[in-house]
Image (cartoon, rainbow, N blue to C red; front, side, top):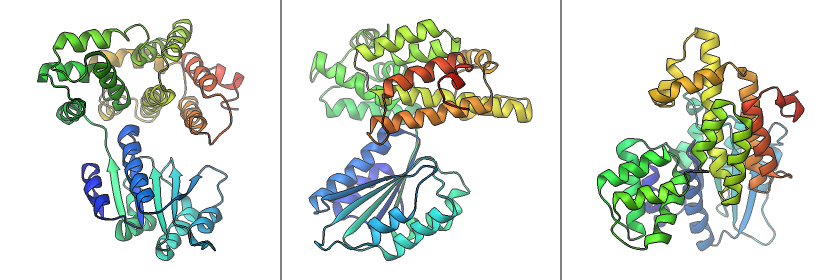
Length: 344
């Protein structure tokens, strides 16, 4: 069954399904959807949590082991399978199908995947989840959807404002919901439950003007490594969460990789700009940055971002902030990729 993310709470309250697939490329909504299922699972006694992360060396027998091996103590298990690419391959597809067909009532499986393409939605494993469980596809929010989402979030904190002020807030976060939540928390800390004016929102956003994440992406596109390091240190000093920066980096790198591939294969770039809804006023910045790297280099940086994200979750060892700095410097100067060991 396919379900809108906004209806997930009602569905979960009625009872948990055996398997969930939460897929998409918008991290906040995806994370909140998974948290909703986790919370209900804990309330229902699924206290043992197993987390698996699929990478190039993943052994699919691990999934079969945790899902199909019954505990002597009859524990209820919440099993989370992180599938960043959304493509489990042949062995993975077979393992997922087997797990779903034989899943014990003492287990709930959540598959957390990246955005799925049309081909992935025609696979047997996807259809098996759709038949036996719940599929939730998370989409980025644009324009009126984003305005409505921001209004609801403000209202939850007891804050109200007019439509023009909501648009100002939307423009400041450019669709980054993680950044939007930070701005709303800051507004609440400053004003509490109150009617906000446009000036209130402008002033709050301006407080971050020196070191906000969008200044970082501007520095990256300009290839200004000195400015990039300055802004990055400012973000670290202001304790901005690493996932917010990684969200912004991934967005820019996906655009660069898409532009590079489209230009090499067709000689054009309009399709990528349209797909990612890049404003006309910013397209020239991307075109200037495009000549600095190749498709392989941009994709290598995307993979490095995925590694940094795993570090933030404690899955991989290492300093995520050091890797983020290396990614940023390599964005400005792709020749650094080999120096940092990001690609060979």
